[in-house]
Image (cartoon, helix red, strand yellow):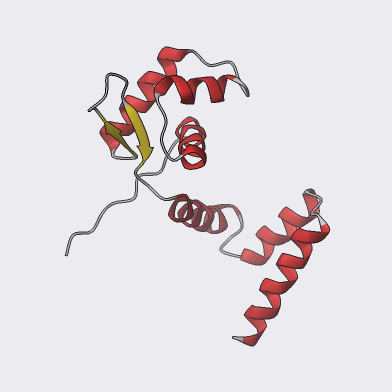
Length: 127
């Protein structure tokens, strides 16, 4: 049985992954242009980060074209679960309740989001 070790992406790597998760695949230029809409970042910085991410196994690279095309090698859901679990354990003393209280106390949830949360709570109570 092969066990793969989870590699925690840095904040910059998470921003790149978000673009790749949204687009499914993209060139360095595509990712850079998307990131540049939100922050001041150099093309060579984006290129170097994506090369490092490829070496770490966080992204896959298709070299069959002149322009390399990248895809996320880690799922968004798995990454969210891992990082959220780590956050609950380190910042909230292992209490998901504390996380929810902080999240809902500091950010206004829409009526739709509150309905989704209520639906989740109702389902959890039934289990």
